[in-house]
Image (cartoon, rainbow, N blue to C red; front, side, top):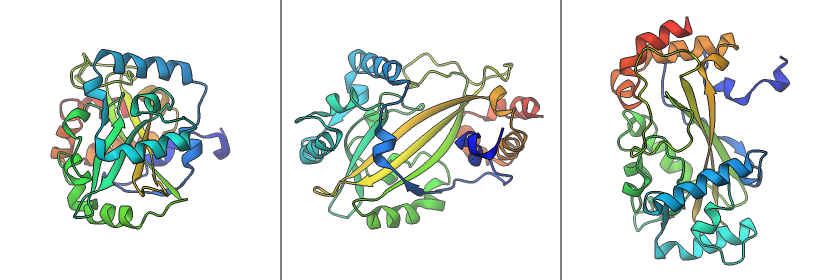
Length: 262
């Protein structure tokens, strides 16, 4: 396989000890939100979540009405609501508005495919509070993220990616769902690297921030086809601080994962 057709996620696993990395790069918001070949499958999953428990996945505070309308216009919808956006766009999305202290607060959006967190508990909270359970994240990146968001200009988009581990490839991993734990024994075909590709852009009229999230599931077996990524993930898991391993549900499986990665 040549470098031109290698998967983009290979860069997530460098030969370095584990740390949270911001790693923003120039992006393309229109391309990020564009339809893919998985559109029908993704829309079916999004509709199922919204029909089953809309209060867990769909949010629209009145203060975000103008920003939602601007997002809808950009998406090509006529006066769309967050629900209409959620059934039009494949990615999850959050709309963030600045408060009186210039902190960006989650005011609207649709998170149909959460990664073991409860979006309904985060509406109305600033970015720092949304991320507060993540050990070492705010200590290491908080000030940099604040500065980055404050300086984000309309017309430009930035993308980044992060990863976690799961025993399931299901997209919707809300804590209320029956998702198997990453508890040994399991095969490398049963462990999944859950990659979140993210985009950030500022809306030109309301100057709200639009934050999109797309998921990519890669089995451990697939990753092991790429020796450099295999070695990088092995090192990341081996050097992950205990509190981060607990947060990522890796502690009980750390030894087994390292054995599977060789």
